Image 1 (spheres, rainbow, N blue to C red):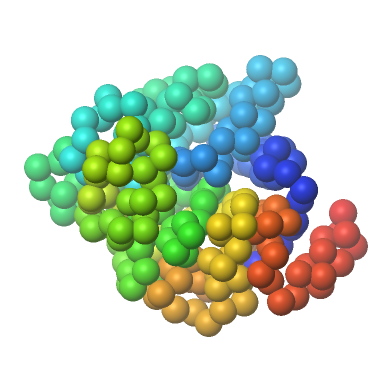
Image 2 (cartoon, one colour):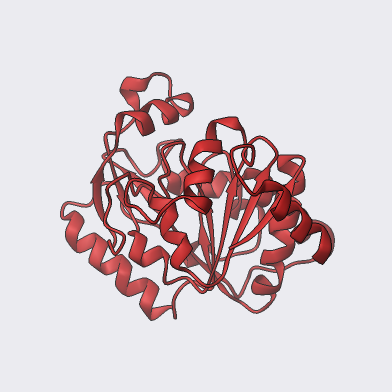
Length: 253
């Protein structure tokens, strides 16, 4: 893992967008995350599109996950969220932005079809991730198999509580989600994972310095050969070797 620590979420967003830009210019297949963490990155990419002419016209994209059991048009569906946060403001073809169905009658068939779509696209070239306070990536909750594939999953109470801020009440948060599996995610050629805030510090420490364990799904990234971890000071606060990571960052900057 390469670990970079920046002062603010906006600095992290600019850093991530600079890393993603060369892939966009090559017409890459992008892996997109939702939630509040990637928003500064998406804002930076939108600025590059508007001010520097960065074109996404030759790209396609796959969303990591989707709530199950809510209408696709619901304002908090990830289909709606990614359009609001990014794709409606750039020149990517809407048909090239792929997402899992939130209402599939047969979730297993939907999951298998999504895996096939990713494979047929040549795989994900660069995947953007966040990390949950319990160490989940996408909606792969603790104890998920480290070789898991796209599937329907039950959400943990902590994840439901964490996501309640996006809904009018916790009772409105879906209890299930469709998600790419850990094994699916690890097949991306490059991964960028972002964490900000003190609430993520414990999970970040487990991801980077802890043992490989299904209790921290993000620790699976230790097995990938091209992962960039972007943190603010609060998210990095639990790291035992934080000064070393800063020294390496400064040396190569």
